[in-house]
Length: 228
Ligand code: ADP
Image (cartoon, rainbow, N blue to C red; front, side, top):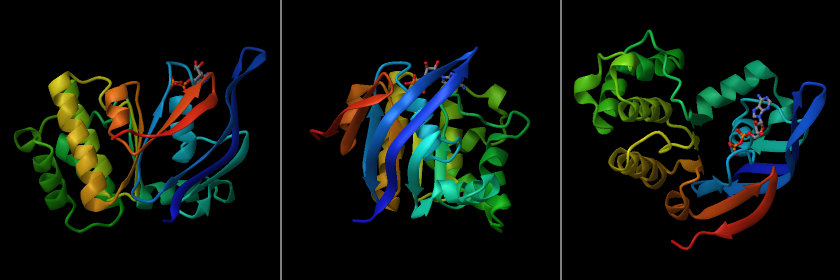
């Protein structure tokens, strides 16, 4: 199987006052097309940072990331944005919906930006799929956390990404809504073949994926094949 993500010798640090804080060190792993993959570890271990680097949202200090067959360091910011729009979906921990747009507009706008002619129709279908048929004209502030998360998922699915990065997709949800969201993610993985990369501290969710990468203090401490 082809690799959709290949990470080699990644290092990342942040400035903290006059000091540099090393957040990721010696990170190497890869993910196959259509695989479901979890990144777990305690709070502060570098999971979100790693996800952002892999998705091309931020840049590493050193090392190499090949995403969808392209070395990210060969791309400028605009080119990385084009790759993300075409191939990559991202679900943020805090949803990051646009507050001045309705649920439907949040889903349809990325499609319109891609030049889709039937953006509204597709947006409606996706919102129906995530159980939000009667919430399409609501603004994010009029939606519960679970509903906002499902809009964010519909938006991430809308462009049919080859790979979807989800940062704590169930972190802000109650158990029942969390289960619905997990079901949607794995449906996307199985039916559309979208590669799933999930950051979570929910070990039950991690066990549903095929492989688990464990981080601690910015380093990989294990790579496991999941029991399920
Ligand atoms: P996790 O997702 O595992 O909780 P993060 O990747 O969010 O970990 O953070 C790893 C470490 O990097 C933490 O110590 C955090 O405080 C620090 N960090 C994250 N983002 C920044 C930033 N933009 N500037 C400075 N430090 C940061």
